[in-house]
Amino acid sequence: THFGFETVSEGEKAERVYKVFESVAQKYDVMNDAMSLGVHRLWKDMLLHVMNPQPGICLLDVAGGTGDISFRFLDYVRSQRERVARRTARANQTPSWQEISTSYTTPTEGIEMETEARESRAVVCDINKEMLKVGKQKAESMGISSGLSWVVGDAEELPFDDDQFDVYTIAFGIRNVTHIDLALQEAVRVLKPGGRFMCLEFSKVTNPLLARLYDAYSFQMIPVLGEVIAGDWKSYQYLVESIRKFPDQETFKQMIEDAGLFSVRYHNLTGGVVALHSGFKL
Ligand code: SAM
Image (cartoon, rainbow, N blue to C red; front, side, top):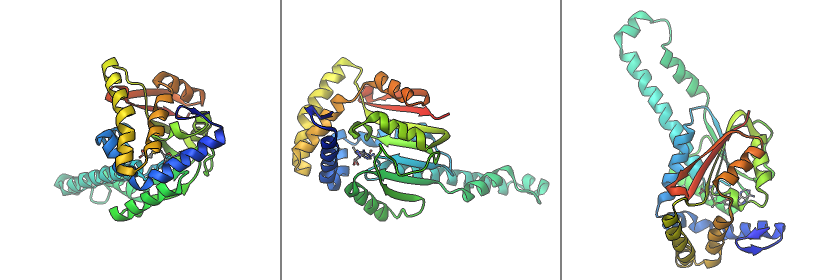
C-alpha cells in the first residue's frame, strides 16, 4: 500500500498514520484553520446542513479526531430543539388553543415531549488517543458534557454492535485508513436499517485552472505551514500526498455502492477540492 507517494507495507502505513496524528494532535485545529484558510468550517457546516439531524438521533463520527463534527451535530440538534420549544410556547400563548383543547396536549407539545425524552447522542471514535485527548479537553472548555462519548477504535474493526447508529460520519478520515473497503463494510454493519452514511473527503478539483492553483498551493504551502506552525514538515507532506492518492468522486461513489449502500450521491464543495458523499443502508 502507499504512505503518501511511498510504497510501504500495510502495517507500516497504519503505524505511520498513527505517528502523524500523534505528532500533530496539539496543533491540529490551528493547522486546519491555517491550511484551509478557515474553509474547513464551511465544509463541516455543509455536512450538518445536508444531514439536517432531528433531535433524538444517534451519531457515530468515525476518525472523529478532535470532535468537530460531533460538536456541530450537538449544537445543531440543540438549536432544533429550541426551535420546537419556541413554537410550543407560541402555540400555548394562543387563546384559541387553550380554549378549545384545555385537557389535551397541542400537536407541538407532543413533539416537544417526544424530543425531550429522546436525547441525541454523538460518539466520537478515533484510532488515535492523542487526538481524542485534545477533543475531550475542547469539550470540557466548551462546557459540553452530556450526549457525547469518546471511544478509541479502528474504522476497519469498529468496537460496536450491528445496527446501532442513525448516522455514520467520517470527515477527512477515510483516506487515512489502510483498507477503505473494510471501513465501508464496517459503516454498513453498525448503521441501523434506514441509517445514513456521510463522508467528507478531499477529492478531484473539476476546474482545470483551480486545479493548477490548488496543486501549487497544497504542494508548496502546506508543508511550509506545517513546519512553521507545528514544526513538522513530513506529517503535512504526507497529508498532501494522501489527498493526491485518494480516488476521485465517481470511483469513490462506486466503492460505497459496492459496500452495499443505496441512493449514493455526492456534492462537490469548493469546485471539488472536497466532496461530500452520502448513501443509505436499506
Ligand atoms: N474528523 C476530524 C476532522 O474532520 O477534523 C479529524 C480528521 S483527521 C484529518 C483524520 C483522523 O483519522 C485522525 O484523527 C486519525 O487518527 C484518524 N484515523 C486514521 N486512521 C484511522 C483508523 N483506521 N480508524 C479510525 N481513525 C483513524
